[in-house]
Length: 113
Length: 111
Image (cartoon, rainbow over all chains, first blue to last red; front, top):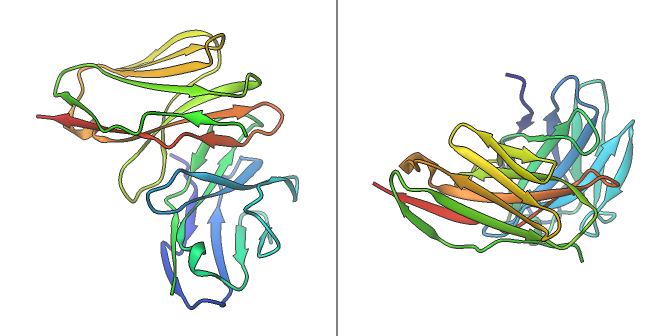
């Protein structure tokens, strides 16, 4: 069964460092997302991406964050100058159609120390 | 602020019983409704989705949607200990396609 894959599964980084989280969405999907979940809290939308551009972003997704689809398969989330409060599980997700079922990757657990 | 509300629980049911999980949403423009299961430390796993008013059944799971009341529920029949998890309700608005999640209801199925 096709799945969304994410790397790394866990990353520890020093405060102020840059982090890149990588994702390979399901191959025939056209809509890509990043969500995050701080420990004990709800899953929060960060950004959606379609046709090589951001279609929507939340207020969390400020200038510290960026997304890119560098080739035909990868979808990345870059977090610049990480802060302690960026520690969370980051989920990549994709869907075939707008408003359709969204499938999640296994997540990348980011710990900022 | 568009919200999705769930009782955080825990909801405890004995093995073999029916578990009933409820969710309300504030945005009347919401068009698609999803239930995800999340085990601790894991990613959300799709259980059911429903688009139209009424019931939708899939195995032991039934999703119910009432758009007039802005209410969606998930029934789990013959609950098993392996069903113990947090169940996330999520809705999308056709304009955005993004999921808005509730905080989740923790279900405990006791043998």
